[in-house]
Length: 145
Image (cartoon, rainbow, N blue to C red; front, side, top):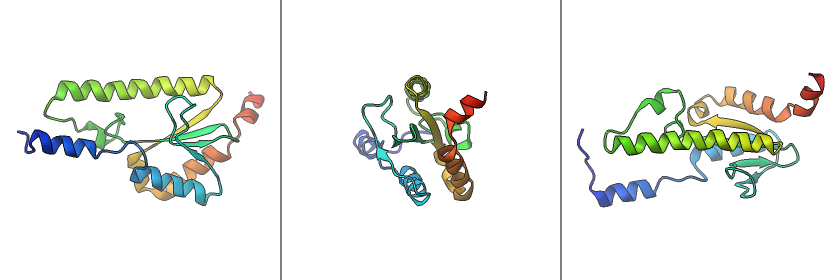
């Protein structure tokens, strides 16, 4: 399928793609707040600048777009037609960076929950998942092992 936008139009569209304060991220923020938890946003002193940081719990929540971070859902399977080699490498490097960041957070003593954009549709299930993550105590789990 040929490109329907001019280079200038495509540049404008890509410039509008946000990395912070996205709709899925705001939905997760509201959910966490409604559950009674307080958090910080985008702490630069942590690996990967996590979306939500709960310092007292030593937990972070990252909200990932399925397409950009190569989730295994139907949204991520769609590959761009134009400049496909570039986009394949770009998306693969995003996923590799996510793995490195997750390992760095774990080494620093932080637990991470990744919320995928496609999970936002089932808010009830997402609420249960987030609640379980935030209320679980990793230290007591490790003491039991």
